[in-house]
Length: 360
Image 1 (cartoon, one colour):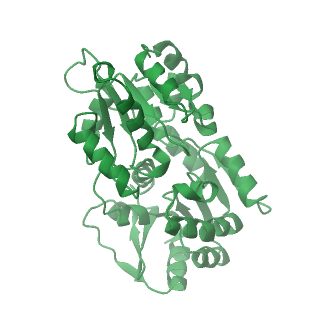
Image 2 (cartoon, rainbow, N blue to C red; image 1 turned 120 degrees about the vertical axis):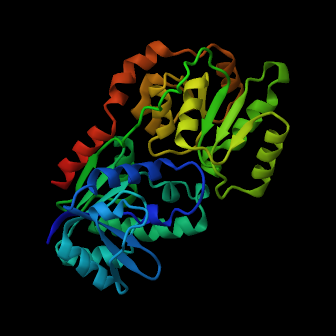
């Protein structure tokens, strides 16, 4: 039986690290729920030594039975081609270039979502392994994909500028990722308290800049700061500094927080601070806006396109400007409401409809 789409869930299968899921993790999980709930789909799970295909509904089960296993890549390509008309990857855990070539030869339509190309544009914000992988795999996607999905027009432009004009017939579309409104806590929130920062502790998230800001403020004028994010590949010096700041009461750091607890923080805080140095979309900002939470963020092109006047955008080189904004009453509900309905339209249903249009 030929099914409509084969979804690559390699990122989901390989995510063994505990802690708050990243934005890319959330997009892959939403895509799986939307597309794998019926028998007209299948999933592929790849590892270094084997490649497995699973019927759609079974792929969502924790104890799924991975009934078909393929070792040579050509056998996996044959298996996908026999079962699906389209191969879809949304998790940035890209297949080897050889598999893309094999799928192309077998007439399988290849659709890939590009969240960002940060390892190529900003090598210092990525590990050496990530850089090598990106430099090897993104050109293969550019050469062989039938459709590339971008999250922003800025991202699409950066892709074209970096990887060149697309081959004839290749589609490039912009789809906003699914944004979930953080669920309000059971008890009504009577007062918001302190600031929130969400993101993996890694160089581009600029956690050290936040610590600079909070340590610079006198204790009597320093609002609470809660940082939610697992330790990434950042230098040990910053992790030691963050641990010390948490132990001394300057900040609170949660490495492993479930979704209800994070949602409660969105509703209980008085502002989100997001000093990232490079982003593809900035999912925590959209979630914060849907929780009526004002946002201070770095002035990046992608954030300007997506969130416009709903956030305060500042350079990530001026702690003084951030401190001034933090100390002000940053209640921006009037400007949030102007963008609120647009962000609300980026929910899972809208994402699913846009994705179905691309898949055909």
